[in-house]
Image 1 (cartoon, helix red, strand yellow):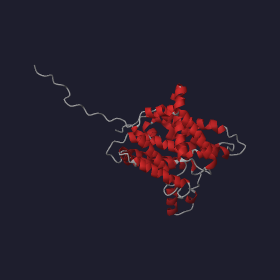
Image 2 (cartoon, rainbow, N blue to C red):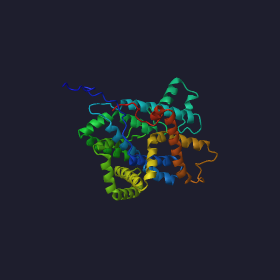
Image 3 (cartoon, one colour):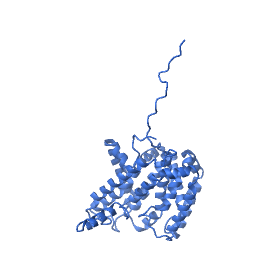
Image 4 (cartoon, one colour):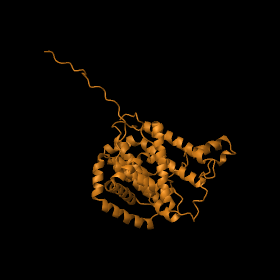
Length: 357
């Protein structure tokens, strides 16, 4: 009898899959907690509150860099130097689009924070070009929170190179060198403004996230649960000591902050599962909230009929206003996602939906 001929002699080519990592609840909860703390810092609160909030600023942003490095490196194939090039170009497009939105909404009002558009009234084309370059952060600090997006674009371009170093166990000397140099900046040994150029501390913690890609998230979560009380206790002691003696959080304090925030996220996931699922769903718009929250806060301060920056204004109101602003931007993003998923992916700095691994 003749052999049965199979309908497919060669396996069909696999369809391209979307290069997105699956959502992890406790990671998204940690990002939401960090974003809420950042928004509270930018709200016009009293200086006594802002000093304590500003002190944890390094830890908050470094947590986002660690998470970004971890998930970006997992989608970097070996042997490709610029695997995230398309994503970086999309981030640049979002960067320009969102800064343009800031200019339209705040540029011709008295609340434009740097008044960079004033020289446009009477100046030649060279002055106009110089002002425009400064508005987009070329040679100067970008407006609002866009320094973070600018640095993330640069790190995204370098992700393939850093991931290759991580596979060869050569990333740890770079992390140590960047931390040492960053400590020198913190001690004012090197007069470099971290808002105008990328800070070596950001490179270090982004690289730290890449170096952790060999460890599954389940193993990281298990370790954090076992050592949860030690991590939270150490963070409390370090924060209490450093807040009185240092102008900025040390690298030990940053690591403790990252660990403590992740521990709190795991506790929320364990103790309040239904609330944790809802809170984790807010994580998909963290970057959209980050780039728009200062715009919303600025417009509120400018448009409200009373002065929220006055000393008599009850500062505790911002502890309720900040979550409300987060939800406002989140559901605005969900509305954009329903109408135009591609525009939502661009503004939320997410990979394109048809990207292949």
